[in-house]
Image (tube, rainbow, N blue to C red):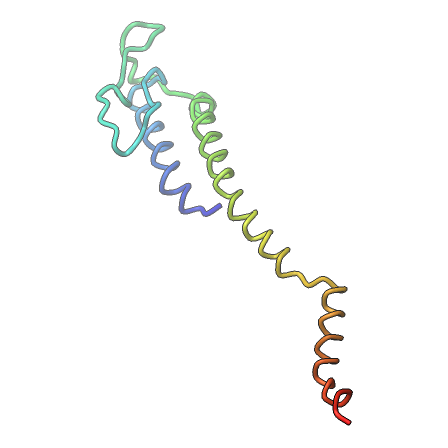
Length: 125
């Protein structure tokens, strides 16, 4: 898979999630539905921390918690990219199989060409 697709699609989501998690101090915000055309005002909006009831902007989010938050979107992105690579693979595989010359057919073709090239010697008196 091209690294360009990861940079264009997945990296902005990862950076945006990490920045909002660092700003809010928790991972209790809505990030599902992060699309270019999405106009959801609740998307990446800091909500109060569910454990304390108030925003804790001074607390830090662990890297492991951020990793666990981003795993589902990364896995779905990679599965989609993998499924997108299957049709070109099968197209190139079938093209390679069609281009492979069978030895029996190759021998028969050479015999036919040889006979047709020298057929005038057999036919002429």
